[in-house]
Image 1 (tube, protein in one colour):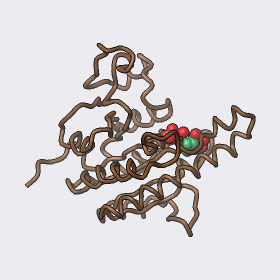
Image 2: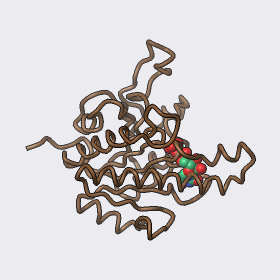
Image 3: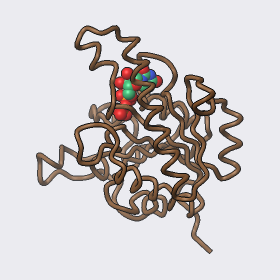
Length: 238
Ligand code: UDP
């Protein structure tokens, strides 16, 4: 008999860069498989998992706009990039023996399911992982905001934000060796100290819907399962 998890239903936000591994862009298959096995481990513990993945390893609308490209076209290209990552994650999860469904905010029915909330909720109840691709489906948003939005829609108990470091620090731990990690922060402190954990709309959605944000690192194998069991280093914002 396993002790109860800290959070039963989570939304895990992965940036596109998390899939890049040591490369400068694109998808590193070894890294993809590592992350998939960490997610599979969490599911084996009994967690219900929704995934939102970014697209920054492939394309960002703002990068195109900076070079003079139309922002809206660029944003749609970025949203399509998240579908590429979502398909990769979905198939890597299936390879690990999980049941996963990729759903896109931009309907493309021959590629994956469209995002339909009641269908997504049913998938979760059947123990499937839902990979929510395509961001919010709207330009001028980010996948951080999509993550907070879907966490609320999918009745998640927490929004897990995977980052390069194992939590939120008083300063950049890569630059300031004696920087300290916060165990807990309030949404008010995050805004007051201007800690850029997620973008403003994402923080506001999580705060207004009382969904705690757990900032942790996926770098160490088993990190996700550890946090769900209350072990290891992380910062909780609530
Ligand atoms: N994007 C968008 N609307 C959304 C989500 C994403 O237009 O709801 C676009 C936007 O251009 C963004 C790109 O998709 O730059 C990739 O997403 P994001 O930058 O959030 O990815 P991450 O930084 O997490 O890899």
